[in-house]
Length: 465
Ligand SMILES: NC(=O)c1ccc[n+]([C@@H]2O[C@H](COP(=O)([O-])OP(=O)(O)OC[C@H]3O[C@@H](n4cnc5c(N)ncnc54)[C@H](O)[C@@H]3O)[C@@H](O)[C@H]2O)c1
Image (cartoon, rainbow, N blue to C red):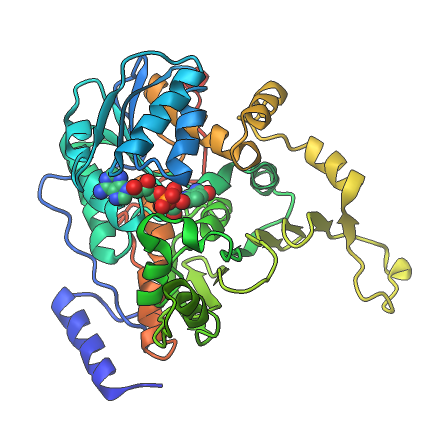
């Protein structure tokens, strides 16, 4: 499908940007803004160690209130400020803290759309932890970094390419951490499987899959001001890709030896979306931009592929997919947790009538296999603590704990601003592909030239310093 106007535009953009020929003849180029003068990348960024990490939490709805509950249980962390547009949510969270034995004075900000400015300016705030609706993530994070604070932003941290490049530039300029709170990289199956992949159990990993399939019927009415349904109604594309793509990008060492180069996307019509919006509004809604199912295929520099799916509109069972395909093995979290490994049998024992001849590890055999691949940061004691505090079974606690631990020790965080960029860009770039008949779209190198400098994903540990 070579639309002449598109080809002309492609050629023009390439000419203007001075790039060499595109990787794919019909790929839609994605511009990369020049790095502002005097700035350098923030790969492996470290900051001064912080004795007690003082945290200001902005957005105290369903997710933010849960974050407050977890953060008061993190050693070395202290909440010093709370902010929500709605004053009663600030009061409710201060009460929650008191009931958990935290009686220190907390500054409170509420009442206007920009009350968070005061929190960002507060001297005893080191980290601004943002749990608002999606549209508010970007202005708060930008201002917080401007005020010299590290930021942690709920998913998706950024909604379009301007916001993504804005956060990258701001982190590079201020040398402040800008981390997206992608909790799913800390789930137990994912952490163990990452360890297996890094130790070569699956051979070379060549294909991975991730998804966000979650029927949101019970939740739509719970969001403040209907922000989530409203966003889906107005935007086509995979608007919530990060839970699916984050864990599998870690397995592929994205911007740590490989990088995503292009994607193509396809969606269904909106069959259920308009119905849900009609029920919500109590009048017929005919326009609904987001397809019920969106699938995106991504290719990497090293010739590997990633499949990402999004479905929040059907009764399809909850799934983040998390499948890892290697030359010698396979891991699957959904729909069933299992591993499959190649078995090298003598030729006379191979029975071609068997549809598959690999060794399947499920149930107790899976548990026994996993026991040999405990993730380096997941000691049995820490795992038990995480499960007792909880938050999606414990992964949320591990995420917060690692964030505070790394800030306390002055270590690079597990996720940097380029992870944020790569995982968020699926939303705007899938939309471009969909709006051009599923044409391939270039995924840029958000590190602007440094994607191959670091080799392999690694958790920073204080004892290595
Ligand atoms: N990582 C996960 O597993 C996970 C799970 C749920 C939600 N989330 C993310 O968490 C975020 C919040 O989701 P939620 O379910 O809590 O939504 P919510 O609607 O329950 O809460 C949003 C809160 O933001 C507040 N808010 C709105 N504008 C504000 C402003 N200008 N200043 C201060 N506060 C403002 C609202 O009053 C509300 O309390 C979203 O980004 C969502 O995607 C992540």
